[in-house]
Every structure is written in structure tokens, then in C-alpha cells.
Amino acid sequence: MWYLCVFYHRLLDYRRPEVESLAELFAGPGAGESVEWRMPENHHVDSPFHLVRLPGDERLAAQVANRSLLVKGIYELWGHGTTYEELEKSVREYPDERKLPFLTPDSTFKIVVDSFGKVISSQEQNEIIQSLTYIPFQGRVNLKKPDHRFFVLETDDYGSNNGLPPVVKRSIFFGREFGAADRHLLPTYQLKSRKYIGPTAMDAEMAFLMANQGLARPGKLIYDPFVGTGSILVAAAHFGAMTMGADIDIRVVRDGRGPNCNVWSNFEQYKLPEPLCLLRADNNLPPWRPGLKEMFDAIICDPPYGVRAGGRKSGGRKLLKGVKGPYTVPDEKRDNHIPSTAPYSLAECVHDLLHLAARMVVMGGRLIFFYPVLRGEDGAANPQFPEHPCFKLITSSEQILSFRYSRVLLTMVKVAPYTEEIEKMAAERHQEFRENHQKWMEEGNLHSAVFEPAQDGKPDRESKPKYRGKYV
Image (tube, rainbow, N blue to C red; front, side, top):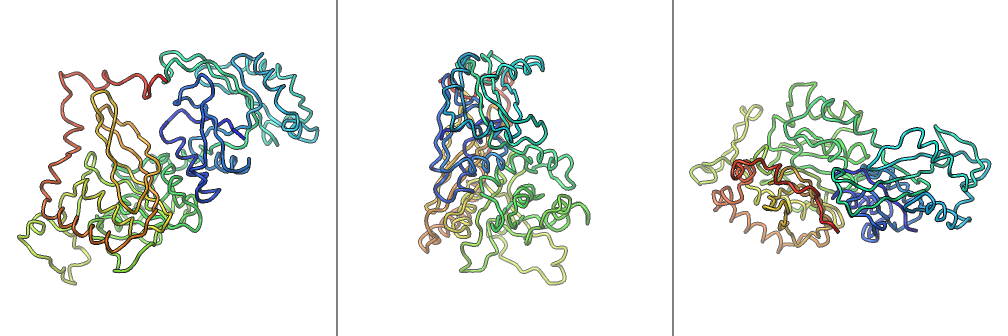
């Protein structure tokens, strides 16, 4: 069956990948690749209205919709048209064996009129509901907890300010709801009410989307090697996953801003299970013992890429240049010692992350991380994403941050084992980074590219395209 999937009109690139990941979560391996999509007639791909075929019955549709952050609702589509006359004809033609089981006298129901691109007054909504006399409702109305929820969804002819190109035409849909996103959790987890946050703390909505991409659920172990204030792990823990984190700054994972304002207090605030452990660890020099492999079901993180906060790695400049050799911290200074660090280039950071994931993620597990992208003069991004022989890229979702700069959420799945040959290649690459540290720091300086003055003194926003997609 083709379902009508109505999205919230935000984070457009993230909508379909989230549904596909949740289908994988609830229906098993391969289900995400089996999801099919098509657009209603006269609708642009950026429209909130999509038609989707899921590899399962309506129970899967309800599970996906209820867990999602961006699905406003998934519906069994009874009819559609460009006018209410066409809608009536379409609904009448829908098979009675599909309609009548939900219109019985012993059932309760509710009809909701919703719209996109226009406002429908209360009086107009009542008139629309009264016009549905051709549907033989026999049950009782229950506005609080009905057995069945029916929706009339109306769109308008889009003008120039609706965020969509004018190819989208007026449509009216009628359907029975299977499920809808629980957006109430976002105010609960919003950053402004959280005890401990930092300048790069992940937005709650994005953290939950990343947790969905990582298939977080009870019994799964999720690891964040750049844990910071723990926003991503909080989202994973909300969905029942076990969590672990690491950060190079011991003051973040150990001290925070005091005994009642730290990473641990964020989990206590929401009454979530605490992480199994938080490590002071360097992504460039991971602490795992030799031979330890395939420990995590997913690694979900936001690596430092040097726009708001630059990456750091252990060693210090003198150690990297060979002026000073490796040293051992005396036992009496270990409690308060803060190790020296040096700048950590994006290229090296992503290489280390992929190598860590190749070794530590289980087969079929996922690596989810943000990758920064510089946009062209026309506002388009044509990036080359990092690759690894152990991983297959399944989705890339762009979030536009400015005319010059965006970030892309990459979702990779592990498809090949970690071998001695790959380990040897990684060691050679590490040595190359060490010998050419300054070169990697100078190449691709994202901070300079993002914050250099605009040409001709014109603000970037004047050059932004009106629509994010093409008029197709």
C-alpha cells in the first residue's frame, strides 16, 4: 500500500533518510533500502506531501511515524483531488472493504482539518467537516481519545514567499491516520533549560535525528568520541540505548562547572540512565587495548571542524616537531595535570574517526557524523565525502548554515571487516599526518573561508537563492 506521508516543513534533506532508518530499526536489516517514494501530482520534492511504500503493514507505518521527529503524520489515503468535488468522487471510489471497518457504530472518531500554505478559519473547518456526509460515519465523536483519527489536508497554490517554487498546485487529501511524531519531547530537552551546555552543544532536535539515524534502542551501545556536554548521548539514552563518551578535555568530562553542573547532571535532570563511562581520550591516540574490535553498535558524533571550535590532539607542538620526546607524568601530578595539545586538522580528524569506527563498530553497525562543506558561488555544494573500505555511505543530508558554509550529516554502514591490511594502511597514513602536520593545518582552513569578507562589500544574504531546490 502507498501511504501519504506528511512532513514538517523543516530540515528537508533529513526527512526521507529518517523514515528509511526507522524502517530499518523496526523491520530489520534491508528494510530501509526497500522503502519506495514518489510525489503526488503537481508537487515539488521539497513539498511536505510525499507518497511512501513501506516494507510492512500499517503497524510499521505507525511505529515509524510515532518515533519520527519530522513526520507530521502517515495516513491511509482514501481520496484526493484539486477540488472538494474531485475529493468526494475519489473517496467514493475507494474500496468499501477498506473503509467500513473503521466506520462501525461501536467505534469513536475525530476529524481534523489541517492545511499548508494557507490559514483555514474555524468556521471554514466546520463547513468542511459538515460536507463529508458522503462518508458513512456511524460511530461517536470523541475529541480526546478517539479510536480513529481522520484528516482533511489542504494545500494552496503557492505564492512567492512560501519557501517552495510555484510548480506546486492546490491539492486536497483525505485519509486515516496511523501515527504522528511526538514533538512534545523537544521542549522538554531544549538546550535553554538544560543544566550543562557549551558553545557547541548539539541542538536537541538534531541530536534526536542523529540518534534515529544511529538506530538507537534498548540493547544497543552508542559511542560519541567528541562527547562535550553530552547532547547526542542524552538523545540516544532517551531511546533506551546504552551510551559511552570521550573527550580530549578532562575538564569537560570530569569537572564541568561544578558538582551539580556537568555531563552527569544532564542525565540526572531527565532521569535517564547515565553513560557506562566517560573517558578522557584522544581520537588521534585512542586508548583501546590491542585486539579489541567490534564493540559499538553505532558511533554518533559531531567532530570539531574549526568554525566555532577548533580540533585538538595530544602532543603539543614540540612533541610533533620532535624537539621533545614522549614523557611520563609523575604520579604526584596526575590528578591535576592537563596534557599539552596541538591543532588537529579536519582531514586527520575524519581519517582517525573512520579508522576508529572500522575497528570498533560491529558489522552492520553505523557511523553518523557531520562533515563541513563550502558552498559555491551559486550557493550549491558539490563535495567529495570521505570514504573507507569498511563503510558504505547510505545517506547524506545537508543543513545550510550560511551562503558559504553548510554541514552534511553522513550516515555510513559497516559492510566489510577490519583487516590487518587496513590497519597497516591506517598506520602509514598516521605517519604521513605526523610528518606533514603544518601542511594539513594550512590546507582547507574552513574558518578563514567562512569568515573572510564578502566580495564588493555586499552581504551574503542578498545572493541567496530563493528556493533550495530546482524548479522541477
